[in-house]
Image (cartoon, rainbow, N blue to C red; front, side, top):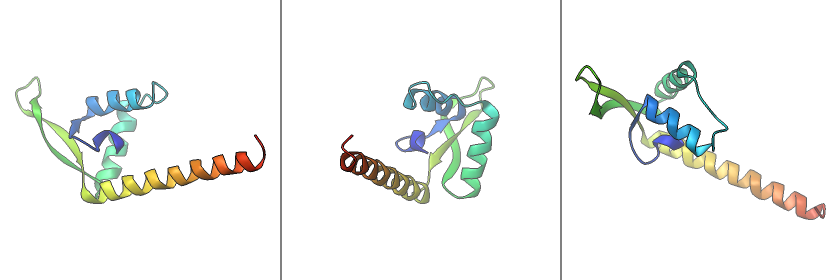
Length: 97
């Protein structure tokens, strides 16, 4: 979902963006990506839209964009992760580490 936070993207662009965002630690297969995209669509967190880039066939590629609900869920997850990091840092400081 983070990959779609600012702009619509087609599948291959999402694959590459996830790899870049994770500094190469996450490399999704096509099956994993499209399974996740289907689940996110079913939950109403992303929507499928026409891409600005044509396919090799001349037809528009299918792209995905984050919905308003998706943006809310993404922001909630960012907050949850930030709280976890803050708690971990506090715990380490209390332990004198």
